[in-house]
Each structure stands twice: as structure tokens, then as C-alpha cells.
Amino acid sequence: MSQTLKPLLPGSTLGVLGGGQLGRMWAHVAQRMGYNTAVLDPDAHSPAGLVSHHHIHTDYLDLAGLKQLATVCQAVTTEFENVPADALAQLAATLPVSPAASAVAVAQDRAREKAHFVKCGVPVAPHAVIDTAEQLAAVNDHLLPGILKTSRMGYDGKGQLRVTTRDELNAGWAKLGSVPCVLEKMLPLASECSVIVARGRDGEMVNLPVQRNLHRDGILAVTEVFAGNVPEALANQAITAAKAVAQELNYVGVLCVEFFVLADGSLVVNEIAPRPHNSGHYSQDACDVSQFELQVRTMADLPLTQPRLHSPAVMLNLLGDLWFANANAEQVEPAWQQVLALPGTHLHLYGKREARVGRKMGHLNVTAATPEAASVVALQAAAILGIAPF
Ligand code: ATP
Ligand code: MG
Figure 1: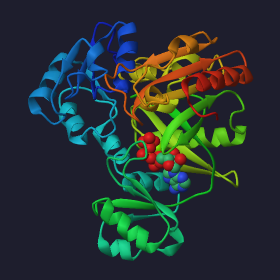
Figure 2 (figure 1 turned 180 degrees about the vertical axis):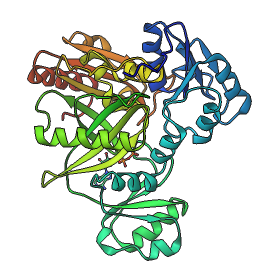
Figure 3 (figure 1 turned 120 degrees about the vertical axis):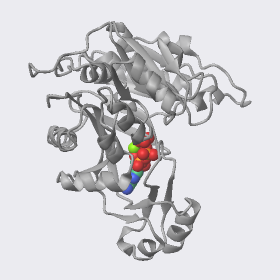
């Protein structure tokens, strides 16, 4: 920790752009550490706004809203990856903003993101940038079958189409509105993993352990973290790559780097999120320092210490589907009391007023003394809730 940074001490007000669940969990931690919080989000019922000292309900680019945020806060972060980079740049004129608009702008654009990975020497999926009809026509056949992804604004598998033939590719680009896209070759995935790093303004970096992730329908379903969840050499490779990606962006804040593990055991970087990530939620109950505390520490220029995983953990995402898991398709509250009767279960719900299929409503962290025990309890919880076994 450099001597020159003057930390923002508890009692200060920290702000976040975006009022979703990530902002809510960040606000809980900031408040636990003695900070006041401010949330800017257009939705009057946003999960983070509901629990924050200040809630500014304006659009992200509303000048009056941004000014108000800058007036009440001493530092600002973001929890929403599609927050306009301009809003961050605007705020940075008067107060510390982390991550910087320049780093968020890279994460917001798949084409720039891929170029950044290449620059860092980290392997990426074979791909082509498709901004124009000419680029579409020039796509090499070896990228098919592939996944066509909009360059901007995608999340949870939205803005993506699987395409097998050139006809499907052409139709797919039209279906996505002929907006700038990236076509990625469909890779044979053996598994997926991610790494969360936190980097301070002084360049100090720490990381959470490698997370093994299971996606269903393009949405994260399960994260498992324990020693040996991925082979050690692969884990080290992922951590080194994630740190290089953060370093090269001169990143300040919490960054998640997602990877594919291919059938031949090799590692390919998928994408980055310039904020805490769903795959890091287990750290709330299984690590001595969570990803949200790392976010608070980086934005307040507090020291970073290497987090320690103290319990093997399994995280189950709780999607809105679970509210409709009964036979007559009526909305029914899941059986939390049965789940909480299992040892080591930690329920996190985001306070969203309406359950919808595919909507992230909460997550369940399961911690135990051994990976086997965590897995047994997580499978029992999944069975109670109507989540398919994994
Ligand atoms: P999120 O923001 O929730 O992480 P996203 O909408 O940005 O998701 P991606 O991470 O690009 O989407 O893709 C979602 C999932 O689709 C991946 O986690 C992976 O399971 C699968 N997938 C994406 N690209 C490929 C690929 N090139 N080959 C094989 N599978 C892929
Ligand atoms: Mg992803």
C-alpha cells in the first residue's frame, strides 16, 4: 500500500451507478463498514435504492442526477456494466471514479474486449468482428458453427444467437438488428471458470480463488469453489491471465474475468465484467473478505489483503422460474424454511417485487467443512427448490 493515498474513511458517502442486486449487496457491506451510500438508478424500486441512504432516481445520463450524486458522494463506482461510460467520465471530472470510464468502455464492447485480451497475450475464441454487411460477407467459414453476439448490451445470454450455416448467420445478423456483432466459433467446452481480482489505485492486486461455473441457457446456474475444483496448473494460469487483463487496463476496482476450459484442457478467455460478478457471490459466506468488501476497499483506497476461502462453497442461483415450479403455474413462494433447515445454507434475496422466468431473484450459498458435504447439501436444496441436479 503506497503512503501517498489518503483513504476515504468510514463516515464518508460512497456512491454507485446502478441499483440492481450487485449495488444492493455492495451497499450492505459499505454500511456494515460505517459508510453512507448513494445509488443512482432510474427505477424507484431498485434493489439497491431500497437499502441506500440516498437514492437518486434519474437516468444515468441525466446531468442533474449525476451532479447530485457527485455532491453527496466522495467516490463513485458502478454495478451495472452497461452504464454509459460517459456518465462515469462526467463524474470523474469532480471525484474519484473506479473503475475508470476507459476500462468500462472496453468491457462494454465485445470487439474491444477481445482486442484487449489479444494485447495481453491471453488466448481468445477464434472470432470475427461484424460491423458491416461487407464484414458479414467476408466471414471465414471455419467460424461456423458459431455464436453471433451483439458487441454491446448483452447479458445473461441475451443478444446472442447460435448459427450453423451461412444462411443462419445472415438471418441472425438481421434478426439482431444488423448492429455491430462478434461471431465466435462454437468451442467444445469441458467446463467454465472465472476469477475475480481487485486492484487498488496504487496497483496492489489480490484475487478470489478460481470459481468453477455451470451455465444453463446462457445464465449462470451453479458456482463451486474449493481447493482442487479445477486442476492447479489451470487455476494458476487463469489467475495470471486475470491479473494481466486488469493490469493492462490500469484497472481500479473489482474485475471478473470469465474463461472457457476446452476439451483438450486449454484455457480461453471469454469476457470481463467491470464489477463484482454473480460467480463471486459465494465469497459473502465462504471467504474472509467478500467481493463486495473488495469493491468498497478499492474505491475508498483502503488496504487490500488476499482473501482466504475458509469453507468449501456451492452457490445456487435462484431464478424467477422457481416461483413457478409447481404444476399449476401459479406463483408460489419457494420453500425457504425447508432449505434453511439444511446445515450451512445462506439465503440471499434481492428484494425484487416481481418474479419472472429467467430473472435473477437471489442466490443460495452453501458452505460446509468439506466439498463433498457442501455438494450433498446443495443437491438437497436444489431438489427442494426445483433446480435440476448438477
Ligand atoms: P453474462 O453476462 O451473464 O456472463 P453473456 O450474455 O455476456 O453472459 P457470454 O458469457 O458471452 O454471455 O455467453 C454465455 C454462455 O454461453 C457462456 O457462459 C457459455 O456457456 C456459452 N458460450 C458463449 N460463447 C461460447 C462459445 N464461443 N463456445 C461455446 N459456448 C459459448
Ligand atoms: Mg458471460
